[in-house]
Length: 64
Image (cartoon, rainbow, N blue to C red; front, side, top):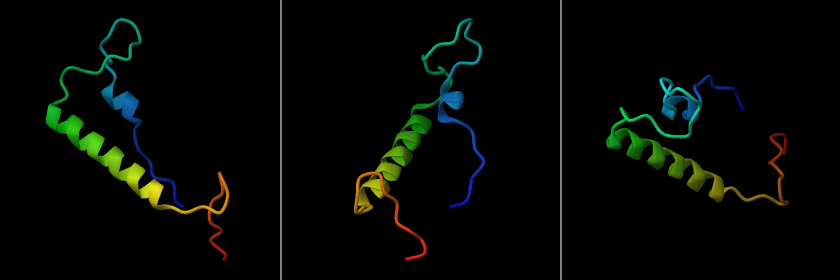
């Protein structure tokens, strides 16, 4: 698996202009953008749930 450069979702959503670090989401993000983000996260989870592992925490061996 290759590493893909990116930006943390929490960094994108966090209000950088807040006086103190906060978990409150930026106000300038549109509802459409939030919907796209949630749909992408749901699709990632659905893809992960399709994987079948022999043991808890095991990953398939690419050599087999």
